[in-house]
Image 1: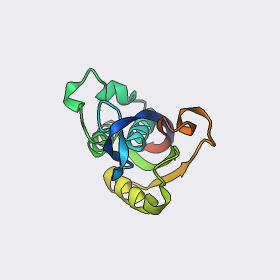
Image 2: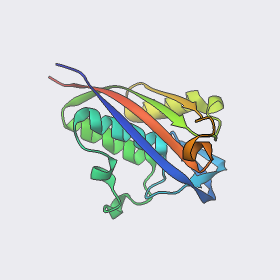
Image 3: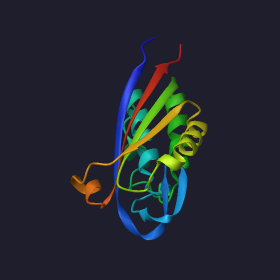
Length: 157
């Protein structure tokens, strides 16, 4: 059985109200991100990476804006359902790695908490890191936040 890798990406612009959801954590002091769901870019990128690795489409395929039942869903709800779909399709999840790109929030004080929350949700190891884009692009201009993720899955015999 050959393991498969997938890559995911998500980005959202800053909203106007407080209450950011990022890496399954709440950041009440930060502005929220705009989106169909809670706009948790880390969770959404992880979902895309898992779907990609399993060959099952992407977040839009499963939770798109044409699916009103997912409007306002939390990143945890989307990630939990993604993992169910991937496992139901016959895959074991090996791990997920996520990098958040943005000027804020500062992830380092809560990185381990984010990794624990995401690992608990996925049922496999999840690593979270963060970086800035050194003033370039929309994240550098502080217009929003982005995340990239990779995932490893293995077909179950």
